[in-house]
Image (cartoon, rainbow, N blue to C red):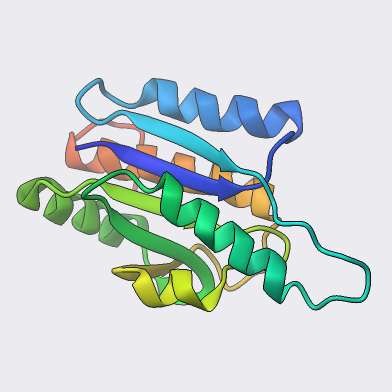
Length: 156
């Protein structure tokens, strides 16, 4: 199983890239995580972002690994505890499914991405900057794996 994080946006601050890389590096070799950065769609002044989201959706679909299960991150998605996220991971592992977590850009995700998603995940009811959502997701995936492997990183 492979974990893929597909995120709209590039040229992130160094601390964002370092945070995602740190948690990816901590994951065991049999559960590697890769980050795929999607160039944002162009948004002209005065537009509502719909066209930019459509362009980003096309790029997201092109970047999805074959056979992966799309998990869209959305503030209205299912709110999980870390243990529940670990249960999701355990299920994917049993089924041999590699999840691809998708973080949208400044204008969110196009409806086509949410419709195609097997699951929708909400990291928090708080509004998080999209760049920070990458780090939070990477840490939570690492923590969920620690739970599954009985590693002492997670404490209840």
